[in-house]
Length: 441
Ligand SMILES: Nc1nc2c(ncn2[C@@H]2O[C@H](COP(=O)(O)OP(=O)(O)OP(=O)(O)O)[C@@H](O)[C@H]2O)c(=O)[nH]1
Ligand SMILES: Nc1nc2c(ncn2[C@@H]2O[C@H](COP(=O)(O)OP(=O)(O)OP(=O)(O)O)[C@@H](O)[C@H]2O)c(=O)[nH]1
Image (cartoon, rainbow, N blue to C red; front, side):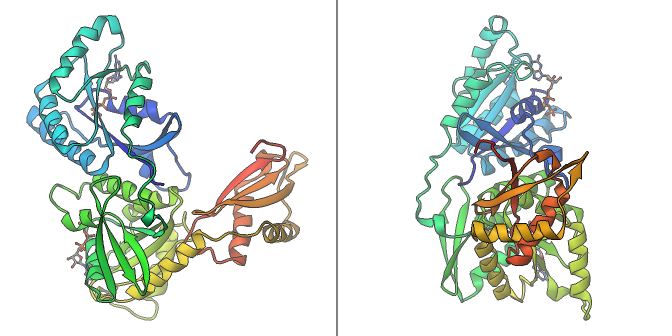
């Protein structure tokens, strides 16, 4: 089930970052060896009551002249409207109601997205409550008074946010169809690939209305099997506002990746793999999705018998945090190896859903332990009792040990490699949870 997306919008200095950080708490998932996306805190997962949502910081307003501020606020609001299920519009009781607030409120109201009006810096209710009422004038409903800095009023605000989430149950019918997100930096050929798929006569296409947001997903049938390509309408529409801005492409990537089973990360062969590609791929990695690296524009480069090898090596090096990723070399323009891409998709989907019997797993485990002794520390040696698979998409394993502290990262990786040697888990990350025996489930 995909997580709802909540975007925070507001003028400079009203307290967006403060609110973002308070809500995200320590929960911003930073995977150590993944490059930067979450480090600049564009998004974070937040859990309130029993609901988890992705919060995005649309950010990026420079306090310049007031004209510029308004233009940037509009852009920010547009990003929120395009990507979020619920928008938190944050204002500042001390600055009071200003003209730009009213203009952005109009824009948000017309979008028909749920908007939660928040008035920040209400550090004292007695002192500021009269000023808060002024914000009713924006015409977007009841203002929620909070103090982000003092963590006041956040519960009521979150109750309201959660109320507007779409029902968890989508129509059910399409849930079995694998969802594919095509991501990549601007100009890499995402639209061309989708258009190619749409143009192929072996492909049957139908637009299905997006369930949670305005995006229109595209259903594609390839050799009798169905796939849903996410947010392709957005990709086809494109370039109406400055989509090139990196933040927007990351946000778009995050929201598409969240909903996907498999992510196709496109890389431009004529440019080679870059840090920006690594950031985008990092989003898929952190979300535990299946990953295929599609090296596009393969038609456009001069090749010899070592070209594939060189590209592969460079990709493995830059994307070293995802050695499991599959790589295919394609041309969206000529259609080169599009069928290979589909075959790889099928394989990755199968691998993501594979379940290994506990008996077999533990055979692998005891063999692994016999071949390489588990680590020890200060006279105490790690004992591994038992391993079992508890989930798919991604395949998730629980390892029971005597002492979690002794389970070194490199030993987990060693066990992972043994499992990968035995089964074809290509294209999917594997997740390991280490538990001490006797610990509660
Ligand atoms: N008194 C008070 N100050 C606050 C509160 N929340 C944030 N601030 C202060 O307001 C200032 C701006 O906060 P930020 O979170 O950086 O605001 P922002 O909206 O992210 O600002 P930009 O990055 O410029 O868009 C900081 O000095 C905060 O300490 C609050 O609840 N009460
Ligand atoms: N030679 C060659 N050119 C390609 C290929 N795929 C795309 N292009 C070209 O690359 C340019 C960008 O392609 P788009 O499909 O618009 O790229 P995009 O990733 O959708 O771009 P944004 O919407 O800006 O993110 C266009 O000029 C395409 O014709 C390919 O396989 N080979």
